[in-house]
Every structure is written in C-alpha cells, then in structure tokens.
Length: 375
Image (cartoon, rainbow, N blue to C red; front, side):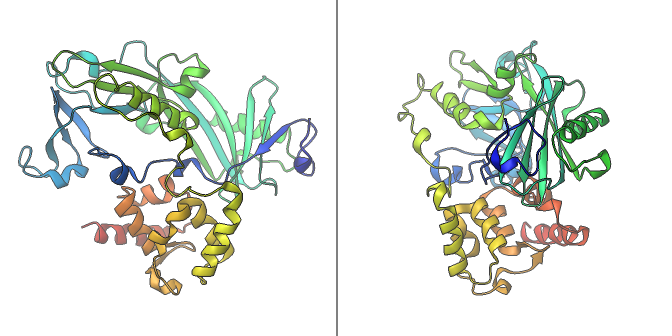
C-alpha cells in the first residue's frame, strides 16, 4: 500500500503516517523544579545510601557545599523516596555495601540492547514518516528530521561492552542504506551518512521487544529504609507512562494525588497541535525579526514558553551573540538556567539538533560563552 503523499518519492509498497513536529530531544521535563516538590540532582553519582539520606557526587551538587565532605563536588542529601534511572547496562552508581543492600546493583538477568540509526540529507518533501518492511521482515522507518534531513532506523541487537563508547557498526549503516534504497528513488551510500545515532539500553529481557520499549522497574523497600525505585531502560515513546507508573508505585508509602498526567500537556505544549501555525504567526507578529523557519523551530522547541526565551527583544541584536544561523545567547542562557544545559553538546545535541548545521568556529565560540556564563 502506498500513501498518496509518498507516491512521488517512494517506489511501490510502504506505509506512511503523520509525523509530529516535536523531536524526541524535547521530551523532557524542564519544569520539574517549579512543578515538583523534589530535589533534582542532574549528572550525579550516588555512592552511599543509608535510610532516608544519601551522599552524592558530581558538579551539579555545587550548591550543597558544606553539607558533605567540605568539597563542593560532594554533598549529603535527605530524601524520603530516592529514585534512579539506569539507561545503560553498566551500573556506574553502585554504592558502598552495607548501606542499602544489594538492591542498588543490577540484577543478574539484565541485558543490554543497542539501537542504530543514520541521518542523511532529506530524501522526500512530505512531512510523513514512512514505514516499510525489509527483505528480512524487519520494519524500517524513514522520518523527516530537523527540516533538512532524514532519519532512518532502526537496527537493534544485543550489546556487550562499555555503553559510554557505543557506536554504529559499519554493517548496520550498510543495512539501513540498502533498506532505504529498496524503496526510495534517490539512492544513498555509506558516504552520504551525515551522522549516526546509537545507544545502549538496559533491558530485563533482551529478547523481548516489549521489554525494550516499556522498560522495567525494581522496588526495594526494607524496614526502616527509604524505598528505592530503579528503572531499567525503556523507549522514549513510553517515557510518560513509565514515569506515571514509577510515581504510582510509591503510593503505599506516601500520600499522592490521583493520576493526572494523561490529559496534562507537557511544558509549553498547552495549545492544540492544529494551532501550531497560529503560534508561529503570533511569534512572528511579536518578534518581527524572526523568519518563518526560525519561528517554526522556536515554537516547536518551546511552545508557549517562548516568551521566557526571547523576552522583550525588539531585534536580533537584543538576543546577544549569535552562534551559527539560529542559536543566540538568549536561548543559551534559558537552556542553562531552566533545562540544566552545562556543555555545548547539551544544547547542540540534547536540547536541539543544531549541531547538524553549526560550523566548528561557532561551536568553539559557544563553548567559550557557556564557560564564561556558567562561572
């Protein structure tokens, strides 16, 4: 079956579905500090957990100086319900023994699964995501990506090694290129790949697709100890449901409100998707220096929170230095203040995908600016 929109770009056979405009990299909770009564410590390592008190290390604990070992990189925090998420197969935050028992370590039957994707130049002009079946019966998708590119995936396999240095094997790149060439008229080769995307996820059952998608949880609640919830892996498509299940598991221990996230928009998304173009028009009306493409990216990234990014700027110069054709100092400051960005890669690859188009000299300028701003 061929979708009508895909007829010009696809060879016969394939399915198409509507593609959302919000990338996976924007699906995180930037409003946690304002909306949750929680102490959030990003990029820290738990090295000891005793009762309701745990000690953590990492640069994000700098604000807790004096509470720990006299080192601004170490602190002691009190929590009634610590939680951690393990995305990869090696436990880098295993605490000292005897404090909270072996419940903090990885269960022996946890495996690690790797996924691989590739990014190439844009292969079609529609806004649809195409899903087709390869000769080995695997499903492969091709999705519009960051306006000028196409994301093709996914190859999944069991993974052994260090998740910190996971990379896409050459065979997976060739496989995805060959799969795309079976359906798209414009051929691609390995040399056309602009960037590869790969990650390793901890899964309780490496052979189960459902386990890889939904993730798994373990719960440790010994007498006189704070309950510890550990989340293993999980796909971004089920992250919201998984978070709700995690909080619900704590209801026997603490008073909780009823589930409410299913009908509550994510931060900045408090408008109907059909009104996206209206939001873009409103942004261009208020900040007249924005081009349509710039306004589309900013509204897709920040939605109704765009005012907190651009403020009362009257022209582009009011936003401070520019880094590449789209990123400005105002947006960098917002991401550093509200969304825990600390390094250039946080902004160029984790909060956006502007790294695909930013020249090297602008990346260096961004790094220098963030180092000065964060000091």
